[in-house]
Image (cartoon, rainbow over all chains, first blue to last red; front, side):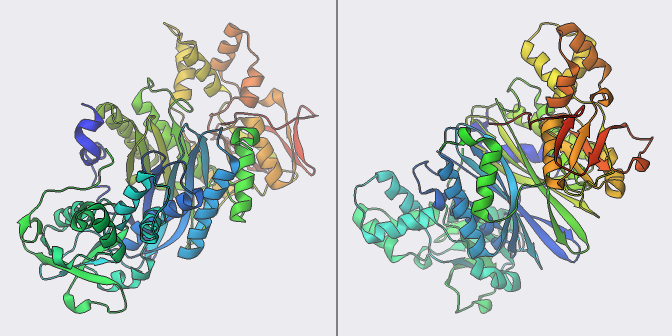
Length: 306
Length: 306
């Protein structure tokens, strides 16, 4: 049997059996060390899969850091130390790699973490794996959503997917709202402003990288609860609405299955809602299983890497 | 300017400037956490560069873990937690990946560390990046060799290079000593039996991955000392000698510039020699600079990835 026949998640299931351990169940792997919990995570960005060579290299570096920081933030931690494993073709311009690093450095300054080192090797394609160690007082994972909780997301959903489609249109000129969507795809910001809130209040939390619906399924399965999503409440940006009007698209589809928003999906009682954060209550947690959208049971769906 | 014009080490120098930090100066990056020091490291193995697809996948997994453990051991630590970032072509057989993982698991059992998770993405070639966190009471790096120290290596040198050449000969049949050399290339063992000794006695330490001469230069530059190597003392295996007789090769060349032995290179006073370890005194540390072989100044030379 080949990998493409079982897909990414099928492969992960098989590998869990080999390791006879429960792995990759959360955005980060928590380990106790001394008095605190360290959160370990790794994410890879590969040319042709996650970005194109002609993207701004600074943006590639920024995003590589952000997607890893997003995992740590989702689990209630602050990022601390990064190692970079970089694969590059040898005919690549030196300045291109320097600019990727400049982008990573700017992101580290923003998120207050540090690149300690790494390793470089040769490959036909540019591929960047980051390894990030974060630290949390309390680990908040996908397990733990309680019936009675409300379901929340940060920010707005679907912008990144719209931005990607705009890039692929390869237009000569873009309108300002289109550039804003492209920016959200190229330079996502991990929600480090939510760490304290997640830490203090969330019963379950993860970041939305595969798309709301797909990620809600992960959370539902791990927490063994039913999640209800109310599409009327999904937070849509003004830019996404303009995009959908112009190109005759359904914004709900973008919000539900568009990936790479790097917003947070989390649950806690309604009463812990924080008016100083851009959080939206999009639904509720009940006893049961599955993800229901407007009362209708859905199938896990989203952005797959295979 | 292109990467191949400056090479791997040139690229690293440039990136240090971008980060305005001293990075990648040792086998691992040490960070203080609580009462102990954590050692962070990453190494990548890529098909076509570090291994061929037709190698036993179990051996690829074993080696991926071993080369990372070797870095931690070299700095006086024990390995603890691993994340795996795996790139695979989607047409690859599922069992191939499972067998890589089986090899990694066996290595983790041997070295007493744990795979916590990781991530999988799509690429034309198999490429495995491992991130390893180790722990040490005291960090022992490349800096710290003192004039008056003796220079030591563990095990024997040059076997791995001979093993690689034998593989590339693609012979129908191999003699037993040839199979032993091939085994040493495919399944190197990190010298975890040296951790306590390095921890307690070494003033400077690193693992020999690029080749003795190249790595001795790194140590000499970081410690700002002169290293003398006496070729008469270089530890050669019986198998390497048989190989060199058979194929009319010079064993010293293999011992000096053959890479991927994953033995240790370290310095401390002669008096701390440990008769229970397979360590050999191959030379001495003096005030000055450069690496001298049999009294003659050498140039940095070894296995480069670019």
